[in-house]
Length: 475
Image 1 (cartoon, rainbow, N blue to C red):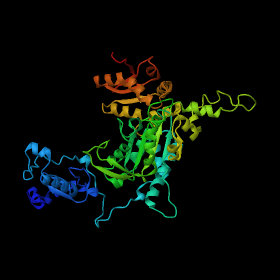
Image 2: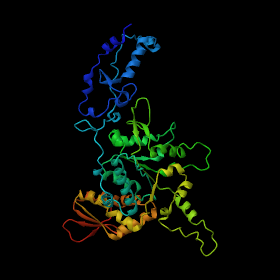
Image 3: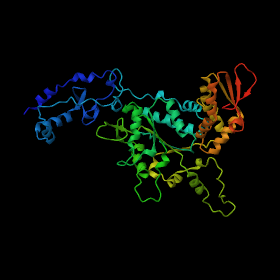
Image 4: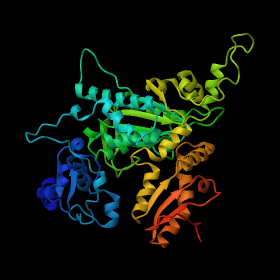
């Protein structure tokens, strides 16, 4: 029987293969082919042909099994310790599952976080103003919270005063711009940001994504750089969908259990997360991410929370001169701004979860005037998008002020916020976008109030002709 040294010689360890992946691969850690642990966890890797990396522990276990010679699978297949063919093994670890090494300067020291690159709160809010109409309070809160969060990271550990992070809970009616606010923030800040959906999360061991998948998305947004991910922002949308289920006898695996699973992430803990996948399995490398410096923003519409707030506000006796009228808050568009933790607990959020979200703020419901501004004021307003599309056909598109008011009235009737504007405009512009390319002589299209209401036609102006001509789509 051969000894361990002979076996090592037969495998022909080739350390030169470690640099065969090019300069791009040097930015990532090597991952053991067998146990899938990165180099930072498993230690120095042994390189064998076909660009395969194996850690010392797995290599030792392999030779121990081979030298025993009593493996039933080897006996059935006719293998012996002297017959080892590793040609079937390939370095099939995709780049998405490679763990990036921490960035370092020329001297080899890790690059520290530079908080001077994060703009001041008033600059963040000014940038948000270019894209988002209204919501002044929400934009101010999120600008200050993000700036303070990165000041806290840049200050480092202080033994006298330890600054706690300020996770946020954002409440607002559907279509008020919760997700759009965070997406716009992601464009303005040069920090990793992950947007996750709470509806897909379940308790560990059940079908669905574990809570650690939220950090996996952040790790992917940071290019699998653990240090960058630990300074990132996570936005968990639809957080109201994990409220505690009422009057149920079955296990609440997608409600209260998910809230309890998120507690350790919000507080700050070392979490093992899969790289390049949403769930842990034997073929995916795992890395440890500390969530202490990750800022969490949770958002949700919280439907029917208004009824809970109204019930609390009108809880006083209905008899007497100072009694609250039952219908006093029925027409209050900003009733959500009166929310407190008692209302959220009754809605189904557990106290421990709310305690880790100290900043709670609401977004205003969109009024008719705000919807009209949403149509044309932001940098990427919906009307500007259609004007750009027709400009590519050298056609000018104009919306009459009365037409925009009619569109806002239709959107208010749908009661789905700014989301309704896109659907209404798609319907209005369908025939125009279909007919315009037919005639190269068309130079201008004016959308009128009558056309929006379905009682008339748009005004079409031909090139070189000063008078206007009415054209019904399809004529």
